[in-house]
Image (cartoon, rainbow, N blue to C red; front, top):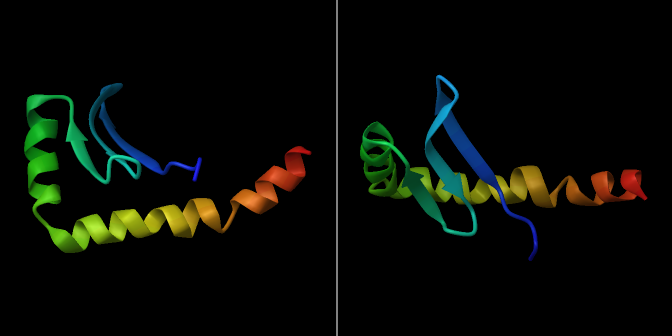
Amino acid sequence: KDIEFIQSYYYNKLEFTRFSSSVGKYVGFTEYGVRNAEYWNNNPSELSAMKAQKEVYCLNHVQNKYSNVL
């Protein structure tokens, strides 16, 4: 429940688009990023693929990382 998958896109150290699993869609921070976010959010296969990344990266590895810390 506490895990969040975030994928950010940067250009020249400026974040222009981000996908967050807690929001469930892309968010744009610049004019270019907003256009990208609109395009990606209107593609259902892109959104479902990104939502699945939480399970692929986070949920499958959290127990290993957590046990290593303790």
